[in-house]
Image (tube, rainbow over all chains, first blue to last red; front, side, top):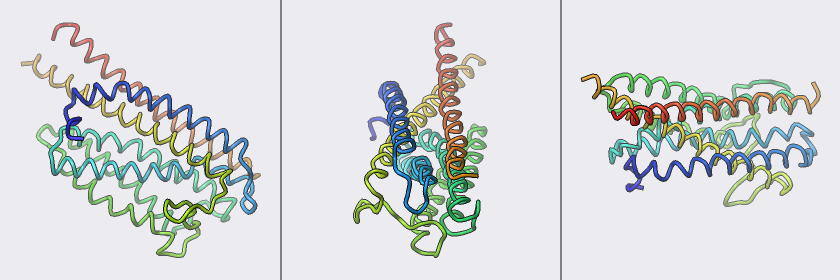
Length: 239
Length: 44
């Protein structure tokens, strides 16, 4: 990890990885989405609306994974002062916000035929909405810090770490409170209550979306590194 | 609305948002890296 804190070494790895993650993720995501949506079974209780699962659940996981990425990179930025850690944290913000927004929108659309309402202020929905607002705050704060030449990005790193307190709240909201949202149905330790005919396309779509997320993060990191280099050269030319 | 129409609506919202995110990220990366290359070629 420490070896790739060097921007030149990072770029030599990021260029091929962007292509592999991007195309591999797109193919896997499209194939598994098609598998689940077109050929997967309807649910005995929810009927056809269960097909929203294949986009809603990966979006929820990646919305939370994005902030986990921000928190880990922010910790590395504050502790080791890695030059790339702040870049990585900022690169996670926009894709994380988009996936959180997709999760909220598809969840709302799924809620209308299932619960009879577009929105309910219960634990899971509200904590996910808070995550989306945290993303917006982080994006605004980090952009403002970048405008300020003297800033080392410490404020947004601290914000990224503090905001991570919302992640366990989202995760355990369905356990701690009585909510409309269903409880946990996929677990690494106690097995899954979803049938394999839905579980495998769901896991495939989530893996594909994760690769796409990775590709977007790498692209945004490459963009920021190129812009930083460009600005430095322009400043040298202006002198 | 039928159940299938809700499914279509969900994907009609989600997939374009994802496509815009990817397209915007690709375009911004190419623009920034091309600008850096152009400056390098001019010998700066």
